[in-house]
Length: 89
Image: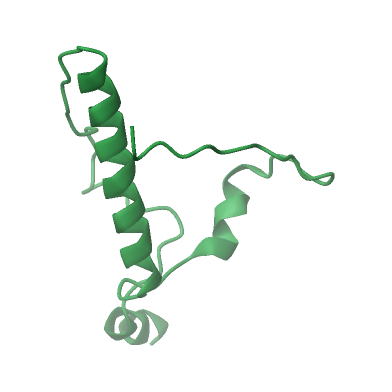
């Protein structure tokens, strides 16, 4: 399959699990252009998964994860600039 990429895990000498605090330094604004790369990578990964299933003769079913967006906001999200001004007042 053309889309298969080989990844090799190389653990850091200082690697340790920091829990949800690990995400605090990885915040992006809603309009951050780096998100487009994430979206493209997700799309390519999903296509590769689907292709692998089809190549194996499997019947593939896709679904979304159920979430409660009303009562559970994204972890460590940065509000858009207009909301930041309103919150800081």
